[in-house]
Image 1 (cartoon, rainbow, N blue to C red):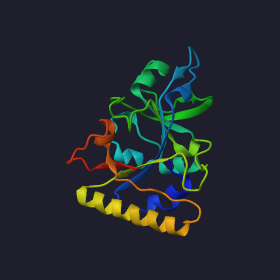
Image 2: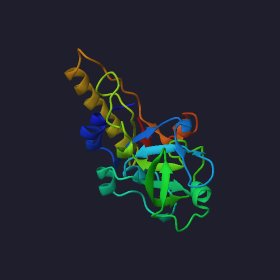
Image 3: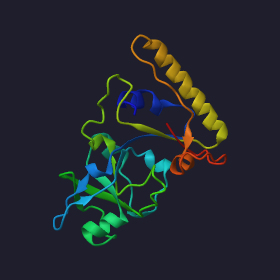
Image 4: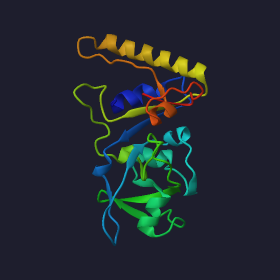
Length: 212
């Protein structure tokens, strides 16, 4: 994955994207909800930013996604699925504002969404949290550009998708030149959400969601 500095300083500023989002996904076995009564519940998680909800259109049953202000402040707010709401609170309405304990930290529920299909693996999750509540989101691996983040983009059509690919390649070429004695980043073609969800099949009419 990519590092936070690359995301915040460069990728968020890309001109040929309608939206840019950073996403941290981890093994589903590593996160748990701790109900006040009953046994712990293993959950799938996505740590991300508000732009994620511009790229992936969730059906909100109540509430909304976390605000930019809450995200920037690292406030523990969370969007949960209706399935998880039913398990934890035994209801799917009247849940916004309640506290839910995730990995021994309390989060305030800001929205409840209808749980999607696991075929939509890029957006499927029991909980969606601000990545600034993830303790080591700014850490890097080995070299500065590497870190926890997958990058998602929204483009309006094929033409903008091609322009975005070219903009990214120029940015990376410039970075590689600046750090030629330290490391090199390789680029690859952007892929649609459709192709990634369905075993990397190519679909010529789906350009709206791309990932890197």
